[in-house]
Image 1 (tube, helix red, strand yellow):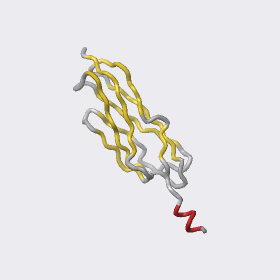
Image 2: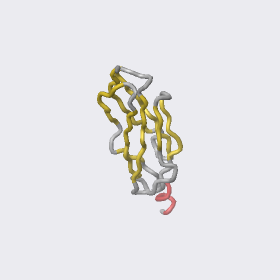
Image 3: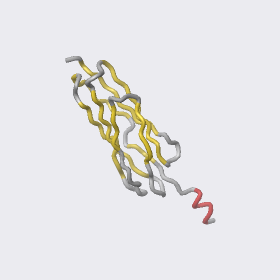
Image 4: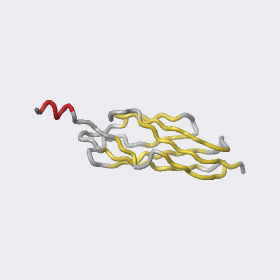
Length: 113
């Protein structure tokens, strides 16, 4: 019986919100968005990597394991100096949780100055 319960032990990554809309910003602004999450599993959650589509986006994520029941934040910074018009970006979050990579998304409109 113990073996069966150990096989079920795993981390579980649950985001409060996987999509954010930053609205309208002027070109050149730095947009920062926080994506909150919780480890709803029974083992520590380890985020190993975050991948983005463009060099205009940087990601900060917890490097230490997130204990079961604990929360964390992934901060996305989007530099608008080289883009304009409608923006729609996806970030892939790689971890030891089932279903990895998880995706978070942000969008908005960058106005020309």
